[in-house]
Amino acid sequence: MAALEARLREVGETRYHHRHPFQLMLQNGELDKRQVQAWALNRYYYQAMIPIKDASLIARLDDPELRRIWRARLVDHDGEAPGEGGIARWLKLTDGLGLGRELVVSTRGILPATRFAVEAYTHFVRDRTLLEAVASSLTELFSPMVIGQRVRGMLAHYDFVSAETLAYFEPRLTQAPRDAEMALDYVKRHAQRADQQQAVIDALRFKCSVLWAMLDALQHAYVTPGQVPPGAWNGEPGMGGQPT
Amino acid sequence: MAALEARLREVGETRYHHRHPFQLMLQNGELDKRQVQAWALNRYYYQAMIPIKDASLIARLDDPELRRIWRARLVDHDGEAPGEGGIARWLKLTDGLGLGRELVVSTRGILPATRFAVEAYTHFVRDRTLLEAVASSLTELFSPMVIGQRVRGMLAHYDFVSAETLAYFEPRLTQAPRDAEMALDYVKRHAQRADQQQAVIDALRFKCSVLWAMLDALQHAYVTPGQVPPGAWNGEPGMGGQPT
Image (cartoon, rainbow over all chains, first blue to last red; front, side, top):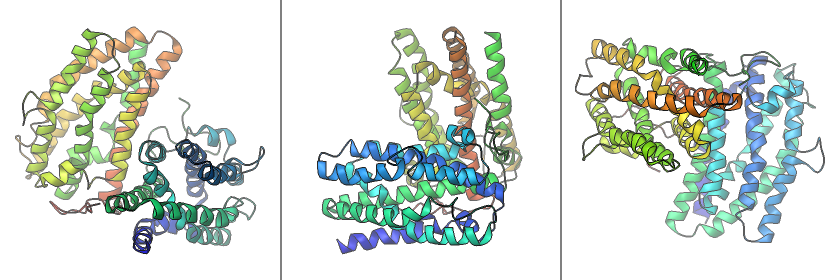
C-alpha cells in the first residue's frame, strides 16, 4: 500500500493546482483586487457545495463509525451555529474584499465553467463507486502546502486583505490533514485489486482536473485574455452577473 | 408567443458562440492546424453525447408522436447503418485532420473543461423539467448562421480541410432548422406562464454558456496563453492525452 500512496502523491505533485499560474500569481501578489475578488466569488460556489458533496457521501456509508468520522466535515463547513463554519468564514473573505453578500450567495455571477466543474465533482461523488468518491477527496493531502503559502503571500502583498478576512484558512491547516489521513487509510484498506487502485488514482486525477479547470477559467476570464463570458461578474462589487 | 420568440432570439444574438473569439478565428483562417485539431478533437465529445442526450429526452416524452419526431435526431447522429450519421461524419473530419481514431473515440485527450461542460448539458436534459430540456436544444435556431460561415471560411483558408472532410456540416443546414422549429413550437405551446417562459429563456442561456465555455477552454489551452492542462492532448496526432 506504500506503492499506492506514492502513486497518489505523485499525482498531487504533477497535477494539483499549486502549480497553476493563477495560484502562483495569487500568492505572489501579482493579481489586482478585481482578480482576487473574482477568485473569491467563484471559489465560494465550491465551498458552498462541499458539505452537499459530503452529505451525499455520508448517505452512502453503511457504517455508523465512518459516518460519524465523515460528519466532522459537515461540522467544519456548516458550523455549530449561524455565523460559524467554513462557509461563513469564506463570506468574511468576500465581505472583506467588498463583494455584496447577495451577489456571492446567489452565485449568479460565477463563471459557467466554475459551475460545470463543481457540479462534475458533486456528481462524481454521488454516482461513482464509494471507493472513488472517497479517493476524490484526497486533494486534501496537498492543500496545507498551498494554504500556508497563499495566506503568507496574500498578507504580504495585498493591502485589501487582513488576517481576519483570511480566517477561513487557519482551521483548514489542521482539518485537512485529519480528513486526508482518514480518507487515505480508507482507500489503502479498500483498494486491494490493481483495477481498484487504478480507479483511486483516476479519481484523484479527476479531482485535480476540477480544481485546475476552475483556475483556468478564472485566468481566461479575468487575467489572460481577460474575456468575461456573457452574464458573468464583470467587476462591479455588488452588481454584475445579470439577474436571470 | 411572438414576444417569447423575440426574447429567445435576443439570447442567441448576445450569447450564442457565433460571437466567440475562437469561433471567429476558426472561420477567418487564423488558427493553425494543431488548433483546428484541438477543436475537432474536443468537439467530438459533444457530438458523441448528443444522441445520448436526445435518448434521455425521448425517454421522458409520453406522446408517441413527439417521440417519433424527436427520434429523427437519433437517426441524424447515429445513422441508419455503420459509417453513416453525424458522428461518423465528424470522424471523417478528425481523420482528415490526421487525428488517430483511437485518440478521438476514447476522448482521453479532451480538456476536462470540455467534459464538464458537455456533462452539464446531458445532466440538465436528464434532470430539469421537460420544458427546460426541450428549450435547451434551441441553440439550433442559430446554428445555420455559423455553419455556413464556418464551412466557407475553413475551405477558403485551410489547405488541410476539404469539402469531403467537412461533410458533417451540410446535412445540418437542413436538420437543425427542422429540429429547431419543432422545439420552438413545443416551447411556445407549453410555456404559458411567466415563470415557465423565464425557465425557457434560462435554459437557452444555460446552453449558450455550455458552448461558450467549450470555446473558452480551447482558446485558453491552445491559443491564449496556450496552456494545456495536465493530461490533455498536447498536439501529437495519435498520442497525448495520457492513458489513465
